Image 1: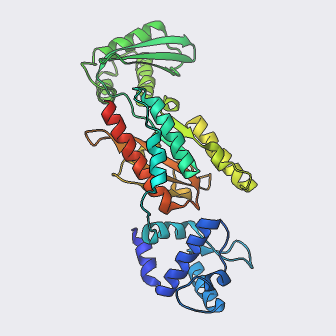
Image 2 (image 1 turned 90 degrees about the vertical axis):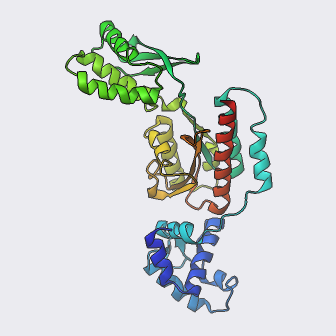
Image 3 (image 1 turned 135 degrees about the vertical axis):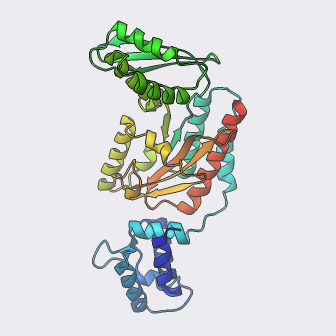
Length: 355
């Protein structure tokens, strides 16, 4: 629990804590403001609606609740949702029907990891009724050969051949003025450094080598290598690494028009694949599920949405990808968290078994 959440909870007595919890749970379930009369029927102690209204006003003063209309009930603020998630959320056990649906998506014995993750993403979207994100793992086998090919003045291809026979062709934007000779020079420079390294290892070595030899290398070749490195690291090739399923779940008929605009903005961001490298970085601070609410979510802060995300790991306990669910801030967090957690463990095991 965050320090702020802990301090606020310590300021609240049992009645305030229960009123706050009931308001948040009611809002997460219905999406509607929760009024004092509704709470009088559900609180463990019998108190008047006037007493409850006073408690709600105090919670509003603390910044935990908000009243969208003068005469309406209350809804949690982003800070209120954060405190609820950190301090009061009761995470359920994974529902057996949800588990069966996720397990069923892995039934094929195919070695096509992309197809497998696509099916799991669709199942995750179906189970949660949200949009699912799956960041697929990079291919980290040792390299055998790399070649740059000019396609047009503003497009080039990098052909990456791995020692295990896997080949990847990635299109990227080269620096202005690149020539066939600068491409050959860049390829020769890179291939001289391969020595069985993985892409991640090569990227680090190239950065260090460029610093040492910058004066010796033609400036265009250097820029070409820099552009290629971005592609190799997944930044310029993120469209092939991010699987998004269930967009329609966030665009239902009952969604208010202003929310539709925010959701469309979210998916415009996804389709442009901006900042997708950050998606994995969100999970790099350790294992387990993380929840990003509203503007806490660096990727989708304009969408008014929440992201529940968890990394998955290979046999060496190294983070190689992530799975997540996007939905409105009133997600059923207690149900979604164990689903995302289980899916991440499932993906990690499947990829480990296939490798």
